[in-house]
Each structure stands twice: as structure tokens, then as C-alpha cells.
Amino acid sequence: MDRHEVTESPAGRWTRPDDYLGAMARKRSSRRARRGRDRTEPESARLLLSTIPYLTLISLIGVLAVGIMVTDYPGSQPVARPPQPQPHEQGVAQKGWLQEAQRDFHR
Image (cartoon, rainbow, N blue to C red; front, side, top):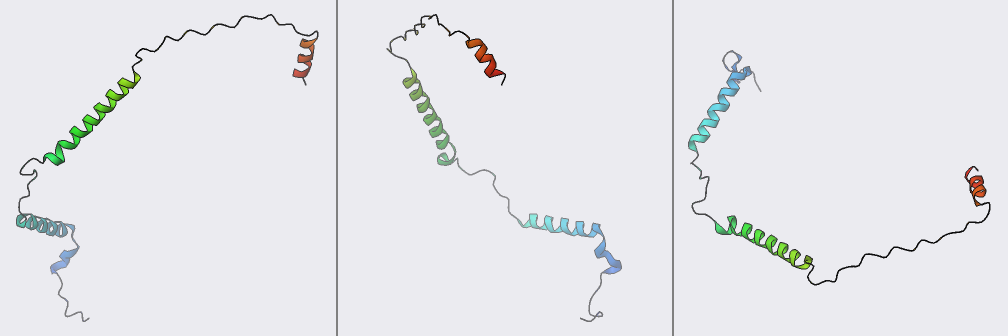
């Protein structure tokens, strides 16, 4: 490519950051001016997408809670008796068991 055919910008303007930012701002504002206004809300409420899933979820949680309460209620179950304590038995140790245990412990 021949250097004479290339047009150069006046005084090296393409290297300044202000020129880049100005061009970007102009491009953005022109895009916004051409664009139509978008609606942020639907024209009518969509019951199927907004309210019904939450009502269904809340009702399922309620049914689950009632089911847990019904199955957990004690009803007419008999009262459990406390366990009887085991009678204390007097034990008898062989003679010399303490010395034998001490000897095994110090090995």
C-alpha cells in the first residue's frame, strides 16, 4: 500500500483519549435516539406466571406442615414406664488382683 493514498487525521488526533470518548458518546446517544421506548411492565398482569406458582408452593408447604403435625400428635399412646434400676450386687474379687493389675499397668 502506498503511503500517499492514506489520509491522515489532522495533527494526530486519533491518539488522544478525548477523541475516543467523544466518538463513543455520540455513537451511544444516536443509538438511544433511534431506539423505541421499551415497556418495563407487561400490559396486563400474568396470573399464571406471577401469583399461581407462589400460591401453589405455599399450599404445598401448608399441607406438608399439617401432615407432619397429624402424624406427630401422640394421640392415645400408653405412657411409658420408667426403667427399673438394676439391683446392686456385691462383687467378690480374688486375692491379689490389685497387685496383678498394677504390674500389668507398669509394663
